[in-house]
Image 1: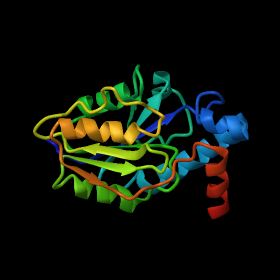
Image 2 (image 1 turned 180 degrees about the vertical axis):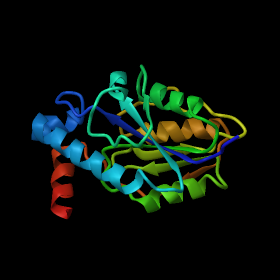
Image 3 (image 1 turned 30 degrees about the vertical axis):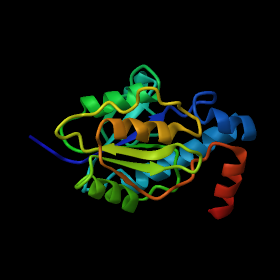
Length: 200
């Protein structure tokens, strides 16, 4: 039975009105899609072909699995499926082959190979790992998934300042030992975007 570490990059088809909708309200749909394409391509290029883990693209809408898009042809694709973010991530944790799983969003430009390696290393002696985002959410979440797969997303208030706190409370109730990584910025507002551009 393979216990290969698996990195899941969750991505949406880069269409106006479907990606970075909060950001689009500040900078416009075209620029928001351009940011998403740039950020996701850069992330996949940085971490997608590392031999230390298997990278899987989890795509939305589900038909994107079978359509040409801005995704490398050499990475396996799975459909995110229906439901809110918690339902979709929970399904990935339940359905992927055995082994530790780390999930990230495609649009966090600060993620490096070192971050992913640190997450998998943390799962060596913790049940779960989380990478906090500055806005109260998180840019990474991972589970060892042994000896069981815990349900950790019930009642989480998504896209809110309490998203991480809600998730960590669920982890605590499930008795999971959790490691925290460094805090990174999610680019969700025009102010976030301007800071990101200035730092490039």
